[in-house]
Image (cartoon, rainbow, N blue to C red; front, side, top):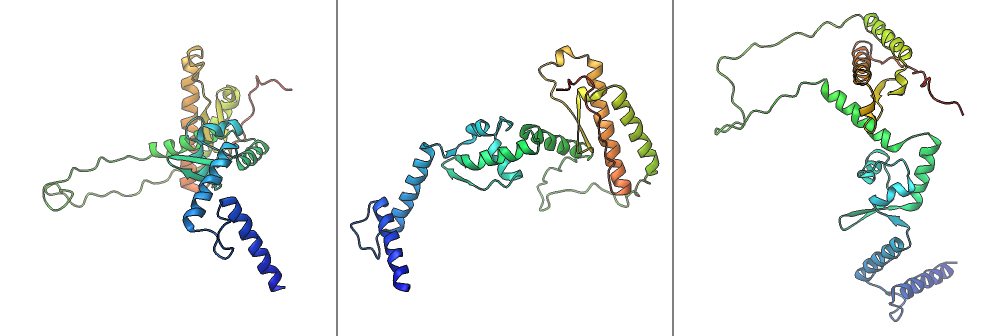
Length: 250
């Protein structure tokens, strides 16, 4: 039994040696590490030429909703896409696995570019709620800061949290406003907790300014109220936004 396994290993080594071009050596030691690395590079080169690996610019061909800018980095960081390798400054991705991911996105009704926009919008909204402080310039002394003379005992106490019912009433009014004004034409509400303006860039010249401002204000007010409610109660209130009344039913 062991002899049979050893014979199979020798056969595999011989086949690999023929592929690499070192079949004239002994079966026991047919190739060096340098030759194996060269064979791996040649294999990847052939795979790229056959279209099995694609670069960032080609991802959109296989994932139609992929963002136009740097989609590969988004796939690696947010979807743990692991079947890739780096060649020089370029990242190359498995075409087969891109197609499989696209099928899953279609099944879940996910527009990849819009998903990235939503994550970026949420991050921007979170940043807007904080008050960034400009860093002090380094002084010529040993410390990278300088305390103004005579300052101490300058503190504050936490702001009392408002009653959760007040915030919920505000959210109820916002939901009614959304429905009555059919804001679904211009606003998306993701997972019922984050509102975001639709991409109006191509048509903003032809959409009344007050409508755009009202919709943007509604998004900010809704996100603000839901964030406040989470700070008070530990959870947000979901809003199952009604669809656009002007959408055609197919």
